View 1 (tube, one colour):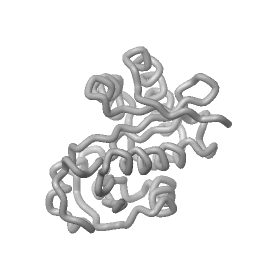
View 2 (tube, one colour):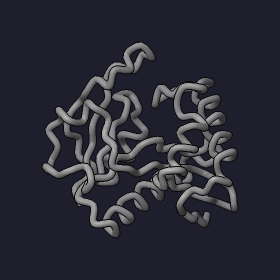
View 3 (cartoon, helix red, strand yellow):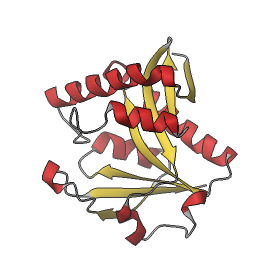
View 4 (cartoon, helix red, strand yellow):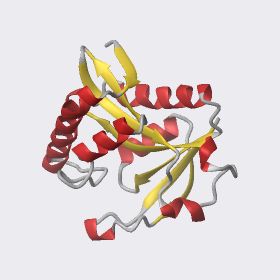
Length: 175
């Protein structure tokens, strides 16, 4: 399968919103590893904001959006107390947000390709590390991050306990 990863465009917003909704519907019917919920996260507004800020990238397969990722310099507050591998200003660090793969493309390499893109893009942008958080029970994502060379640095509470999401694992890949 040929995959093209490129910056998301305003014309992608509707397709991204549909991807998020279809992914959340899929997760609600089975094992909801990330704990995402339709209408709460991710939503159309995440796509609008990511594209407006120039931080959202899409993976296209056969002309359709198969996945997306947001890379920016905006950590969630719990990141500030973590014991990261390197000490750097967030202007030199990318944080992964809204990393999603459409259910029709799961287990087809889209996630791996998006992570590989994030690493190469970060190197090209002279970024020192990539950081992310993942719900502690999201085993498929944890396996992908560890296989991709990310190092576990700690577990934090992101304040999402009211959604049943108590703890998140923090990962970093130093470049």
